[in-house]
Image (cartoon, rainbow, N blue to C red; front, side, top):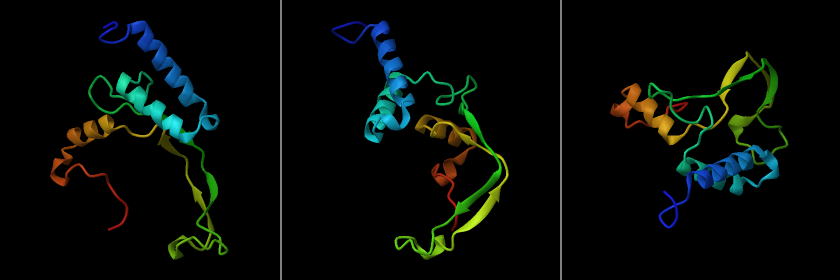
Amino acid sequence: DAWPGGVTPQCKERVVQALIETLGEGERVPPVTRAAAGDALAQLGDPRPGVGLRPDGLPDIAWCKVAEGPFLMGSSDTDEQADSDEKPQHEVTLQEYKIAKYPVTVGQWRAFVEANDRSSDGGAPVRNGP
């Protein structure tokens, strides 16, 4: 659909590519701008692997490996803003795991809920704790 009702497919593709480049700039782009670029890309159709759905309708997740090893968990005793359950700071060693490269989209979550018949709990995200 071209002007006046819209833009040409070529123009749309250039905008999509510019938004992807903006997201790829990382910390050089302010968070508010990155969020706006992500929102616009979602509206236009994000072609990146890992943000949509697979052909079978399930979420297409791009996974990144996180190497095993130690890290410091919690807050130091001098951190006055830390809650009591964040202390003491201590070393934790994790095994290798995977994390999604991109945040899960609403469409991906919806597909997960529908595929796993989570309608009985309102499709609420799984939460830690009571």
